[in-house]
Length: 401
Image 1 (cartoon, rainbow, N blue to C red):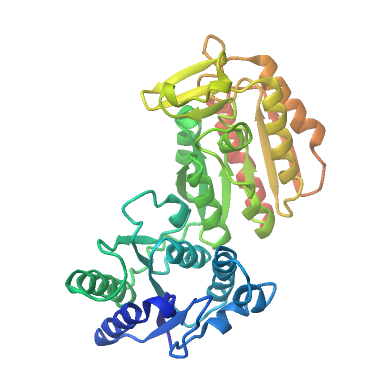
Image 2: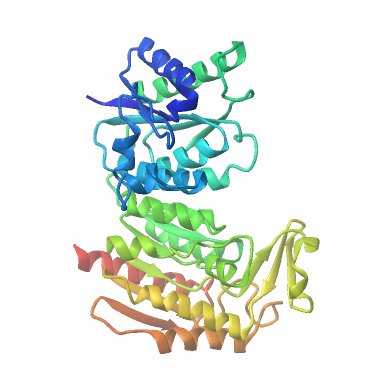
């Protein structure tokens, strides 16, 4: 029978977690208390801490016998992620906690597929929640008061959270199945023309989901791909790699392209907007970049042109991951420029930097029957390039059928 997992450290939050379970049960739903305590596990848990800890790659001892509390919490977070990912009786996850509990429980939530209800009542939910939510659909509810006993305010907040979870579980949203396969596209302002053309060409046969390449956008697309909610991707805008390697604010993680490597899903990609590194307002640009070429995208976003050496590193990073993809792959190089401001007469036009990027990809490319490197003598936003992207995607999807 499906049940809602109520997750937290029962050694310090038993009363609050028990109240949340009681509210769920009063709403007519089954609920289970999941203990993630690392020091004094509770005997009252429906799923004890030892069972969670045993899911750690190093076994329960790696969690429950860790000498440092921080190390133990981190280990329990990993164990919880592995535990939750393997469950088939879970209707949703409700967590309660402070900073440590929030980090631990949301690590487990992020391992779950998009669409499964996830709600975290947290003392840090009114601040920067990006480290906790990541590319997932975790709902964060500010606890107002610390989760340290039940009172008039905490009862209302925790009760509201339980009832919100009950509503999500009891009234699931019907799938709006169009019958068309879902494909993910990455876009930035300077590749909008290209992506818009591709989207229009695909919309008769595919549901196109566009992701803004702001670091979390790429992660979200890859999570959906790995969750099976996307059947393939047109990863046109890989600019997040530039921010990762050079130090911008819209950085990818080291796992960029990992979903395509693990799933073998159809992949068409390009080097959209890798001519730039993103910062905030001009006064936020690190001093080490003084003297570089900048362009004000808007008052809050400052772009910095990548150098030939940086573009070489970007190309090497990308091609190394493309070579590991086991599924059908097409990677297209727009020889006429990689963004709207990388064209003759535009502020980031730099043929030497582009040449270094293309050379790194060409020299690192490992030919294979499933992979093809395609060079198009056109700008990335030109109709010819959009047409080539769509043709490449149609080709590999048809072949994989």
